[in-house]
Image 1: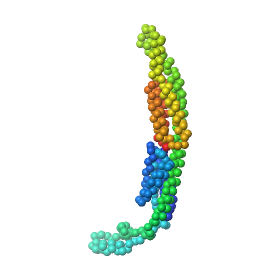
Image 2 (image 1 turned 90 degrees about the vertical axis):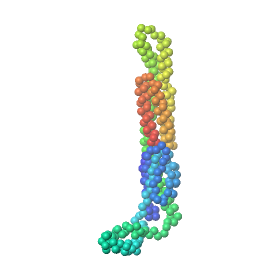
Image 3 (image 1 turned 180 degrees about the vertical axis):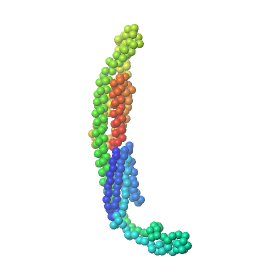
Length: 291
């Protein structure tokens, strides 16, 4: 299931942003992008995701920036600059190089230094991690709501597909009910065309028609299709995740629809079977999006 969520906040002069994206997946796959030094957030982040989601590929990215007003003061190493100028003076006098610019000197590694004061204590780091995880929890909640909104639309589409299945199964039952008489008539016409001068034995013709009708009997397939359609509605009515069961159910529906088409000896029943296969393919496609 797809979705997007974002959460942001500030803690101790640092602004943080969580961005989450979710796409379809057969299982739950969480990909985290964390700044260096924040790997300890990964286990609780995975636990939070597993508590909310069962399927889908979820990407979570954390961005940290320090507020300019709260940024640590900087220090310029004047002594290093003087040593650099002194070392380069002979080259400048020999006109081998140009005089360095101020911004060029500042770009030299070590010239500009950040004064962090004291290292972050364990309590301060724990408070920051707690704030970041709380923000991630909010982002996960927003993502879950987005996925639930999509799930409601998918449920409506699957329910509509179930209605079409019920109508096609009813039509298939009516078509299958006329199969024995149709088989008898086809056999009689075929024999008469092959040997018009031969007198047909009605009992023999009826026996052959019964054998043909037995081979083309699709009542069991229709019963199983009806049972699977009922199971589809039951899964849609349950509150728990049903994606995996819908995957399995769509496979069973495909098998029964294929068998119906292969056993059909009637053009109308074959057409209904093909329509059923089209509906089942739609169910299978939608089931891949369901958690």
